[in-house]
Length: 231
Image 1 (cartoon, rainbow, N blue to C red):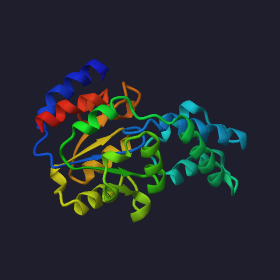
Image 2 (cartoon, rainbow, N blue to C red; image 1 turned 60 degrees about the horizontal axis):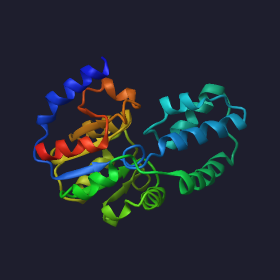
Image 3 (tube, one colour; image 1 turned 120 degrees about the vertical axis):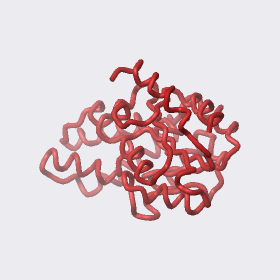
């Protein structure tokens, strides 16, 4: 199905959002534009250690995935394990890259101040990294400290629904009244499994795996305003 058809599909389904009491954002790829930086760095370090992985393959396979799953993918593909210090090397290099080059998703700085409903962040990444990235992008102040949820804290990762259910329970919102904004297939699957409303963010068509999940889509983050008016 082409982009034009999906735009029509989105306009038809947008009116289905009802009684939104809590908005839950994924972090990487939804609030901060970290996916290209992270996946490019991961692929480069893999190649430096003799594991063939292109930037394009990393971007296709890994958005929204648990980091351990990304490592397992490369190890299974090549039939051998990563070096013991790979994770530490990657984390350190990624922290430096984010501090120097990370930017918010276009439109996020405009949309967040306009949201009057409670909002939260729920990510497969470590909470410390989320907080650092939100601070770097100057959007951390839009979220209360106890409204940021990490899969590492509960040891359950998307596409399992537990992270979203933890966020909704902690903030006192019934799952059906939560709207999740996601850019990845695992994230959308987790939100649907949690019984929540969900909108997929394609980032201008970059996230093509969202096209086949049967959820309404937006290409630009500023389009979220129209959903909230209707919900």
